[in-house]
Length: 172
Image 1: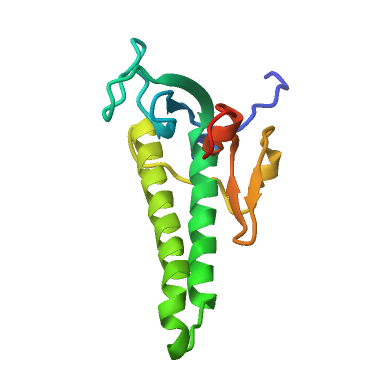
Image 2: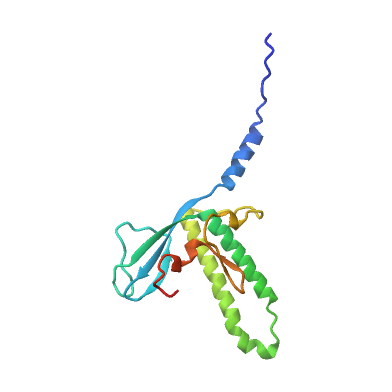
């Protein structure tokens, strides 16, 4: 008999570890910022078109800037932004006599929330299905990129959501 020790491999533990790693792995993707020099407008797309594209409104060939992103990070930050907007909705207690004045502020929050939902939908298109966010303890500051905090709302914008970094000549 030999005196070698065998290592016991627990397949369930190994599978759980691989699933956890996959759940927390970055998902690479691209966002394409589009600038129409004639209309001086900016918009983004999740669809890359190697042959270029024409602006629907005026027919001008648009300038494109592709930005590589971590889809899971963008999705996580968008979810956190939505959570922050929900908190702002709850904090907004408006007396009856001020409601007509406050409609603009509430409308702005609603528009921001709709933009976050649309962004997450596009991120899911990039990933080809549902995206699970990073864990709660994940820190967006661990990303090596410029993050912008929108004061006073506290929303976070990554480089991919700051068109002025890619087209500084355009007012966004």
